[in-house]
Amino acid sequence: MNTLFVAGHAKLPTGIAANHISESLTLTLEIDRTYGVIIDASCTLATDHSREFIKSLLKGYSLKDGIEEPVASLKKGYLGKAGNALEAALKDSYKQYQLYR
Image (cartoon, rainbow, N blue to C red; front, top):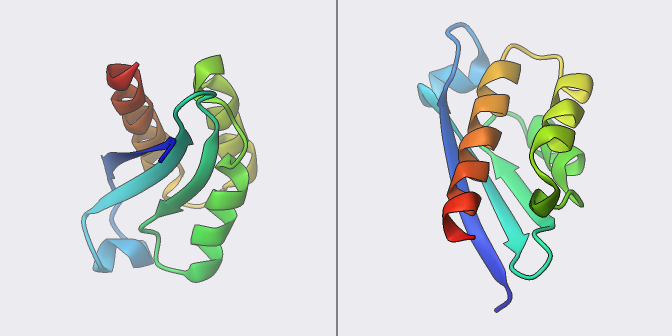
């Protein structure tokens, strides 16, 4: 298998649907080992639509190029209350990837 699985975590704000499931958000990424490209992404937001949307925002970015572009994509595309938690979880995932490299 030529992929890695990394997970990042962040605290969710109170008052959103996902917070009723868990107090933290988990963002998982499947990353190509050679090129660092995000092949798949998943998160613990409450709705299928939100999870699919986050996946579409992150797929295709290479973490070898850094974290700035996927973070900017999240900030530009996701305007919900969990935005800061998603950004923090993405940065945490990136740290896990950096430890591998």
